[in-house]
Image (cartoon, rainbow over all chains, first blue to last red; front, top):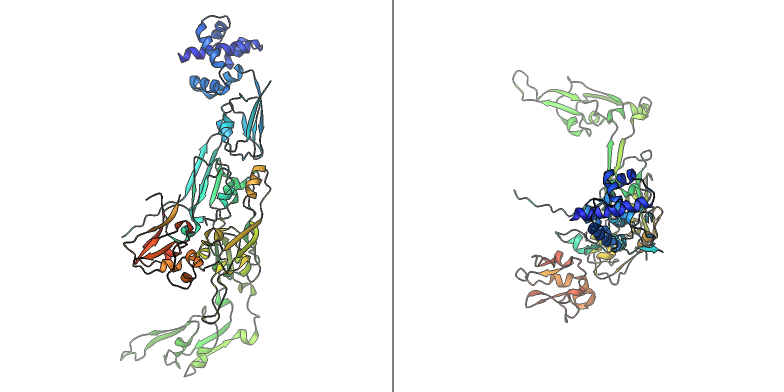
Length: 150
Length: 350
Length: 84
């Protein structure tokens, strides 16, 4: 079953990438699939409707649940990062308060590798942020605010 | 043989992630002064009662670090004046990094000026100073001539007994009918002899001819380069508390000490009951019980020599009757780049 | 961790060294400061009662260890109270 959901998620990602103008070769490389599978997916072959439906439900989870679910299925942080990034179309804006002590818990916790420490303060690269808010939950000084950009 | 278990009271907290962060607490260097507790932004540190720790046997460490609370930020390591807390990121101490504030504290001996008198070594409260010295060769500091006329000498041994430099030796033996003497010879060690002429003056039979050339002609045939004491100085920077005893006692002003904190130390003589806990707690030997000039004389209960104080506050924390007030007015440290760190550091000022 | 006074009454000789050496006791009572037993125990950390050391107002204790040092027979100790 997990494998089916993974194909559903990869299908959603492939469609999204195609929409953004990537060709099948590029999509295959990004999603670590072979090119013919990509071709089948994009033409609606070899993919069950149910898998896609389940994947769509997961994609619409809150961001933290989406991220952790994808990671639970894939068990690979790099692939998780790729799929989550492609399937999220909301942008986020971060603000680090002056109470940040630069402990690095946020950068350790961020699966999207969006947080670095810079001059004794955390810095979030909004480009990579998936809005899961895990960093904010872990922050011992409650210094992180992340807001959705409408 | 009875073995005593040495309890390891050191504490380590670490986290692997983007970086390997490691906090290490060295109990031997800790004075239980409480500065780490004051600075910790997540109240993960609890310092145990200073008096109990310095005065009674305890199995526990001077401080407790709650590893589930500790965020591994490194602040405690930056404020500790006794090097008891060390914080490494990927194996490198943050004391080497300009990103982190570092206490400006140091104790240095100028080798050019030092005369290797060892005053500092003996005065240093944590015994952090070692002075290794090489004395000049005695025979190069004096010159003269000495000769003992063996025919006149009666082997009385008076010169041997009197020689302050232990330079004369008689070879004692049992007299026999073949050789009815008590010594087979007398020898003067020219490397030890200082030509003081005591032997010559004391000899009952005038068998010794000796002259001190230095007395007659001065130092002209001595090399002044041979006079000096050579040496090497060493301060253990880990155990040094930068109290300034060495700087103060040095007779040639060869030592420079920079202290981490500025402030004041007040002791209320009325409240103080003379329990000695503060004296035991102070790593810098600032406090002592004064001795009256004559027995029964009245003196202050406790004497402080504030010039050795680094204002760590261990005495204040140790005092069971709150008779001590340590006020820190300034932290001497490299620039603090973060507002949160500045705020935490301000917590140790009053 | 919570370090506090613990007595071992079976070892106590009732000498009262702890009572008079305690800086909190002697600050609070002129009798103790003069080297005698206290008249009241409402601000004493420990007193000798029926010949045996007895803890009283332990919340006043500054955990300095002076009494532990003064006791000739190890009848008083500062220990981790959570262990017991």
